[in-house]
Amino acid sequence: MEGLIRYDVAVFKGTAMVVVECDLLPPDPAVVVIPLLPDYPAVTQLNPMVRFDGQHLVLATRLIASVPRAALRKAGSIADQGDEVLRAIDILLTGV
Image 1 (cartoon, rainbow, N blue to C red):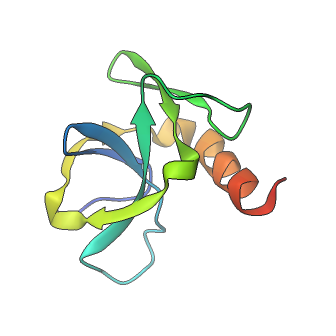
Image 2: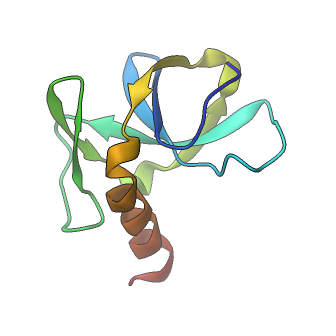
């Protein structure tokens, strides 16, 4: 699916995922995402709780992956919570 930008939420095989890839990268058949799960063991700041579609979901940061862009269905955005997502990625990669 074209037109996905950072912090968009898309559904892949029934699971909501947030796009975390920079919008400035050239188009690719895959896009980097992090799943949003209702029941995931949360670690402070690594797995923030985000609000989406009336639900509180855990950002499963350690499950970061790339998925085929064509297999995603856009469902919304959590751009207003982008700071928490970016902080979680920083903690995953740097520990800080």
